[in-house]
Image 1 (cartoon, rainbow, N blue to C red):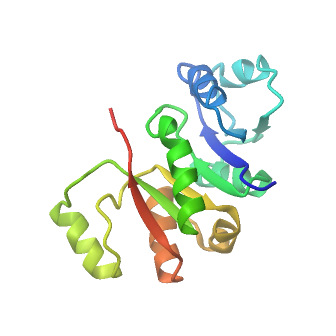
Image 2 (image 1 turned 135 degrees about the vertical axis):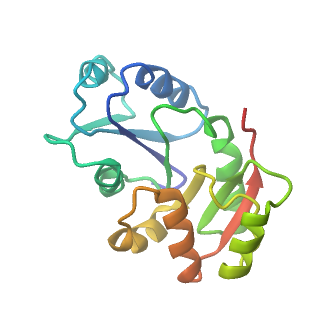
Image 3 (image 1 turned 45 degrees about the vertical axis):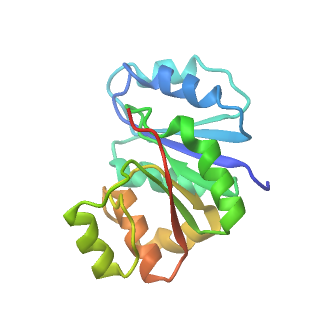
Length: 186
């Protein structure tokens, strides 16, 4: 489906935040699917997820706790959108900028659009930019919109729990195009 955004939410024991995150994502005025992967939570997360009846919501339950990496993999494997964002279940950071990220990728043809929280580069970001040969001000941003076909090419190599940084560095090594747009981080 062209322009459909698949938003993957790995969840483990998120009874305090899962309802608010899903509602916040669902209220965005963009074409999207929400994929929540419940990684065998021991709290009320599964019960809360069963209470939702949204046409654009897919809920997948792991029968054993396999970790965030496995939950993200499961979400990616079940995504059908042209673009993917991995959203933490306990933080709304970046959600209100999804439309801006979509617009940036449409206008640029980039494989990854990175939502940058910073206007100035720190020493760490300068060093990473030198090492990888790509100038970015927010290497640790978890707000990334990724073309799904690009992500599928990276998926077999993704092993780390720090998916945002790992995706970014592997994409750069594969000469994928990465751009940055400023986002609000409050």
